[in-house]
Structure formats: structure tokens, C-alpha cells
Image 1: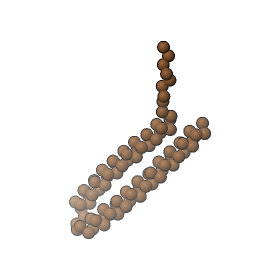
Image 2: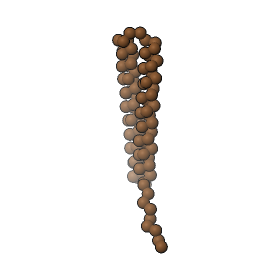
Image 3: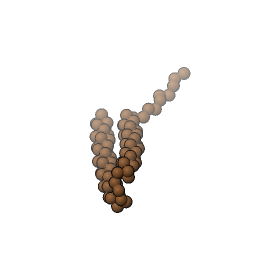
Length: 87
């Protein structure tokens, strides 16, 4: 008896999954880093207003870093897609 050929995912689908997993792992690490930062700042900086200023600045920095990471990953995926399409 012959078996029907097994349908396999194309390599680009695997790359997409890898990228999504990487983004999710980075998101979780980022959240943990912000929590640790807030804990450190809270114990060192006196005054609610000063803490808020420092924490807001750190969150803005984190947002910029995440945006940069996402743009980088989009570029990687775009390049990978172009390379796969050329084959």
C-alpha cells in the first residue's frame, strides 16, 4: 500500500514561528526587566514624583528598544522571504 505524501510546512513558515517565539521571549524578558528596574528604583529614589520621572524615562527607553527589535525582526523576515522566493 502506498502512503500519501506527507504535507510539510515550508521553511519560511518555520522561520516565522521562530521569529514569533523570539519576540514572545523578548517580551517576557522585557517585562521582567522593567519589574526589576521598578523594584530597584523604588528602594533607592525618594519621592513619588522623582520615581515616576525615572520610571517613565525607563519605560520610554524600553518602548524604543522594543520598537527597534521589532523593526529588526521585520527586516530579517522580509529578507528571509525574499531569499526563499528567489529559490
